[in-house]
Image (cartoon, rainbow, N blue to C red; front, side):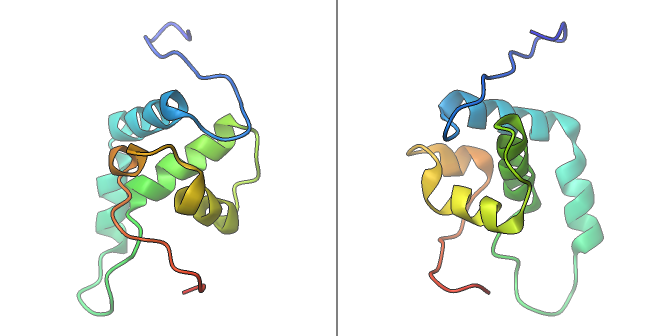
Length: 101
């Protein structure tokens, strides 16, 4: 516990429900996802397949596990390493494809 009511999860091989819930909660508490979304908003072009909230949550999960903060690691984490039911909590709304986009 860090004194602010947050229990930081222990690192593991893959994030469990507790780690993802912690990361999603911290991302939500920061209030920065909507600010970043607004800064990235464009009137033209295709919709982003991944929300900023999901990307920040995945990056925090990687950081908590002391893993590299690479886009490929975020994709790998979000496409198959999250526990069932967690993608909704983390803000993941799309599906992973087999090709890089």
